[in-house]
Image (tube, rainbow, N blue to C red; front, top):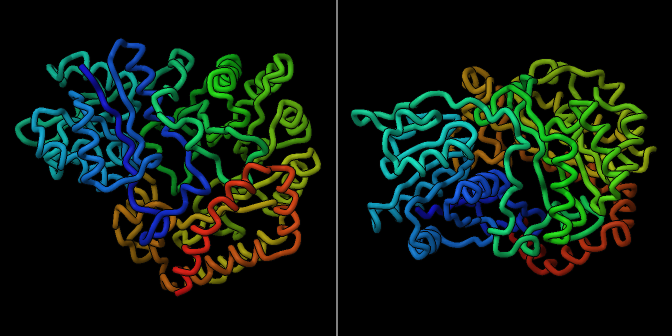
Amino acid sequence: MKALLVHPHGSNWMGSGKDISTIFNLMPPIGLLSIAAYLEKSGIEVEVMDCYGAPATIEQHAADILARNADVAGFSCTTSSFLEGYAIAARVKEQRPEIRIVFGGAHACTVGASLLDSFPAVDFLVIGEGEVTFAELLTSGFRNVASIPGIGYRQDGKGVLSAVRENIPDLDSLPFPAYHLLPDFPRRYNLPLFSYPKAPNTSIISSRGCPYQCSYCDRSVFSRGFRFNSPEYIVEHLRYLHEKFGIRHVFFYDDLFTFDRGRVERFCTLMEEKRVPVSYNCIARLEHVDEELLSLLKRSGCWQVNFGIESGDPEILSKHRKLYELDQVGKKLQMVKDAGMRVKGLFMMGFTGETEESIQRTIRYALTLPLDEINVTKFTPFPGAPIYRTIKDHGEFTEDWPAMNCMNFVFIPHGLTRERLEELYNEFISSFYRRSRIHWGYTKMLWKSPHSIAVFFRNLPEILRFELKQKW
C-alpha cells in the first residue's frame, strides 16, 4: 500500500490577493512528517505533498495527487485549510473513486466524527495523534475499523468514533520527522525573517499537550496532558538535522519549552558538553524565567525567547489566561535582554470583553516593554477552544472557516466594529515599529541576521507590489 500525505495551504493571511507571507516565514509540516516517518518505520511506502511549499490551484493539486498513484491520500487540515483540502479531495475522489481519503489534523479532531455527515468524499477521520492510528488503519486494509481506536467512520450512513485513542506515552519512541520527504528541504523553508542568526534553519517540536486552560486554545489533538522528548533525544535530533541537512538554527515551537525545569537544565548541559553547532529560539512562560535559567539558555545557544503576553489589560488577562503581574513583565523581559538574547512579544487583539480602551491600554503597555519585535494575532474562537461554546453571547461571530487563520477579525466584541478593530490593529503595528529604537535594532540585523536581509531584498519588488496594492 502506498500513502500520500497532503498539507493543504488554505486561505492566505489577508483573505484576498496573493499570499506573500511565505516569503517571510515557511515552516515544514512537522506533524505530517512525524506520521510519515512512523509509516516508513512500519514498512509502508509514503510520500508528502506540502501545498505551502509548492502552491498551486485546486485542480493542479488534485492532478498531482492522481499522478502519484497512491492507494490512500491523508489530509492534515487546520480550520482555515479544511475547505480547500476537501475541495482537492473531492476532485480526486471524482476521478478515482477507489482511492481512500482520510482527514486528520486540528479541524477533524475538533469537530469529530460528525464531520463525515457533511463531507461525503472523506472516507475516514483520524482523531487524536496520527502516527499509530494511521499506521494501524493502513495495515488493516481498512477492514474492521471499529476495532481501531481513534478512527472516525460511517455506521448506517452516520459518522461515529471507534474509540478514544490513548496518547503515545513515550515520545522518544517516535522516529525523527521525515524531513527527507520534502523535495526542497531545507532550501525552500525558512523561519520568520529577522528571528534567526544563521541559515539554513527549521522548526522542531519537542513536546505535546498543555496543562493550562487558556480560553482561546484548542487542545483537541494532544489534550491537556503534557508529554515531552528527553533532553538526550532532542540533542540527537539537532545533531541529525545538522549532519543530514546542514541546519544551523532551530525554533522550538513548543508552547511550554521551559515548563519542566529539570529537562531544560539537562538539555542546556548536553548542548554545552557535546558542542552541538546549532543555535535556537524558544517560547517561554514568564513565570518560568529567572536569571539562572536564562544564563543556561544563553550558554547553550539560545538566540531569542518569545513570550505570550497577549494583553496589557488585567481584566482581559484574568478572563482568558492565567493572570500574571503586569508590572513584573518588563523586569522579566529585561532579564532576557541583559542575558544577551532577543525578546519577542506575542499579543492578541479582539478578545471577548475587549473594548477600545482595553486595546489602547495594551498598545501603550507594549510600547513600555523592552521588546525587539512583536507578533499581533486576531482573536479567533476555534471550535475546540473553551470560549467557542458561548462566543455568540459576547459579540458577532462569523464562522467562516477559510478566514479563521488568526489574521482576520471573524469575531467582533460588543461595542466595536470590524473597521475600528482593523484601525486599532494597524495603529498597534505602526506605533511599535516606527520607533527609532526598533529601526536601529533591525539595522543591526545586517550583521546579526545577514540571511534575513538577503531574503528581504531579493523579494523586495514583490513586497512593494503588495504594499502598493493594499494602499490602493
